Image 1: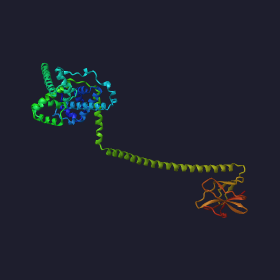
Image 2: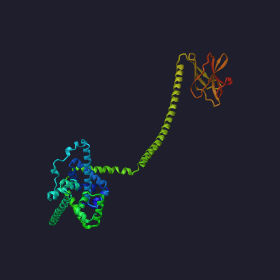
Image 3: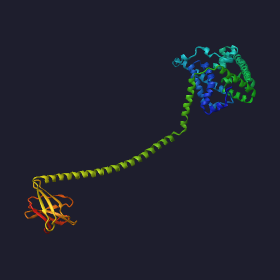
Image 4: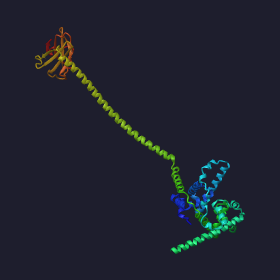
Length: 185
Length: 257
């Protein structure tokens, strides 16, 4: 989509401008994921910053043959966020709540803000929910099927069907887009 | 066993993209993807759908986060070149520069010191000369004052010694003061003698000639030794430096007091 070989090349050569452009292109998408997983704006911003610093430091590890830049960045962000939530959970278990007292005001209680948009909205609710859980909430398939209260096999087929529909929708959008481009010409 | 059917059946690509696979499964899938173009197309389709879905649901983060990111990488970039320059070499360079400056400065200051010392010596010498001059002048002034006192005193008697046939043009004025016990003579009209001779003055006391001193050739007013109970003053020509006894044959003038 917006993958740009030159940009990635420059990023690997520690070009600040390349990082800046990649940030503009991908930070909102990644922030959307982080925020939906951790549901705390302050923490999400810290994690987003941390994610891009890792992208900068580890850019040599990214191999464009294995996948898109966004996929690599998404996986870094998701891992950081889940690790953060895990460490927070341990803290809460040891009853050291003081650390989080001042965070309460940034925690999102109004979930409308996080509601899903785009082609995802056109999916059937259970398909939508399945994708949301694994993609935007960072749950594993094993956690998600319990959350939805369906067997793992059923859950997997939800995901598969959801993706198929999604593909159709995006392809349709692409068709409309190409028609539009033709018309403009 | 990882194969195409298994991958499609179990949603392995989705799990891969979500980061839920173990390292071994990831490696196996990557290997298959590299070989199977059909599977690769399927992979790319899901991958781009995931990305499109995320872009659809993007939330703009506050601008400050980007500023933080760029500031952090700038500060780490600025710090990074430091270790590459060997600090020891750098410090040695600094130390060497300081040492060089100190050496050059010391040499300059040393030359300045020598120059100053020389100037000080010249000033001191000049000062010594001036001081000597002052002492001389003070002495001169003192003697001049004494002489003036003697000459001005109403008790001073003036005697004029006129030259005899040996030196007819000679004329010496002598001032005698018994109160101050001083004798001063004015030699302005005494004919010049050669280097080998001097005028010498004598006082006659009970028929014996007592030395009053050799007359200084270089000054007009000359103080002579005062002799008590002198009956007359006499001047003779003597070999240079004077004699113990007068050469009577070369007496040029005398006067009775």
